[in-house]
Length: 354
Image: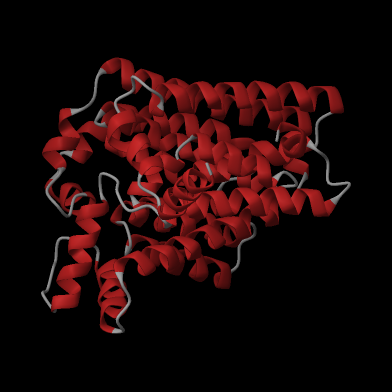
């Protein structure tokens, strides 16, 4: 697998096959799952829509999609398959458009935060729409501005936190050289002010349709928050390092670098609660796209070293967050792999042949 991932695009067929294979694996895991921490909630939501019961504790856009699906007789199982397939196609569109290493992006995403998105399907759709919409940040025009804002509103209709992605309109306003400095300055300001801002009733109402602000304010352990901050920090430092080496400001990929820099605005929210990692997670696919695109531009020896080092870090993160002994292992990792239609079928089929 590693050989396929790091292979240059000399044979487009091999690269395409590896990407399609990983795409199918992701879709099987998310679209054919029938038990995870949020599955019952969405299944009950779908049941309410089928019975014609109104429900206001979910974003309007998602609720109307569920109501429409229920009205035409679609089961929740089929709805999940279609909904997640659309989201994966949106993500894949930008991955293929902006990086020569699309398979590597999917591998990084599988390490983190894919398993979280298996449960949080509204958030998954929201970040998929955002990842697709970044193409309209590449160059400024009124048409691109309107398209980007429209798509972010659609994303927010699936998961309200996506409204925060309007902050990336800064990409239009500030040039490449000033992006890192502005991002650092705003992050420091945000670090001291976000706790007070998040406690205002307006922000609580916007970001918590189900009155979770008490949970958000409670926070996770300092060690967990520190680990996340370090992980995100390493990714951002790598972006800066690759930008310096490859002189990104002279390429048409500079807007991706600016998105990576402005994503640091959301890091201070980790001081409030783990749930706010969703804000940073929204841009993590763009960060992966930028990093892999820049790895492709390195010398052959450097390319291999950076790729192996990055995969090593991502595997450690995956083990720490989702491996045995982690808080997610029993509640998220095991249910996802033990309760899957395709995997269940293949397992039973293998038993029959034995």
